[in-house]
Length: 129
Ligand SMILES: [Zn+2]
Image: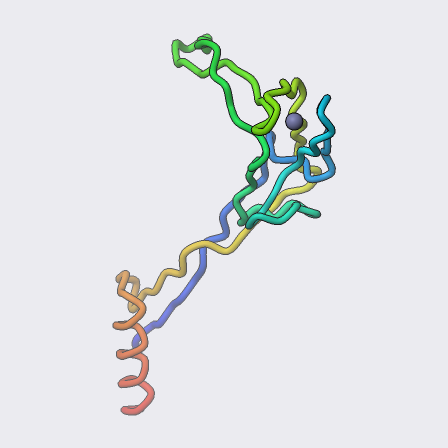
């Protein structure tokens, strides 16, 4: 008896520093800034989507150091149009654990196989028995 197994990873995407889609700020020139997804204002947070700040530009002003020796960039965001500095880019912490489906794995008798091989062998197996 051949054992066929397919399972899917669940990726934990709970974030301690995720975009807060309720955040919105209006700069000195009246330009509105907020998170966007696919070029549209994001009305909810989707962990599988890429959140962007198309109205802002990141301006690096220096380098900071982590206690373990790693470096990070220090800077701030500015309005792309008028250059007004945006001080507080609000992010938030997920209030519950978020998971998204990841890669699917296929195994035959405990041996990892490709999806194609899995389907092929499964078909043969069903046909023969
Ligand atoms: Zn502006």
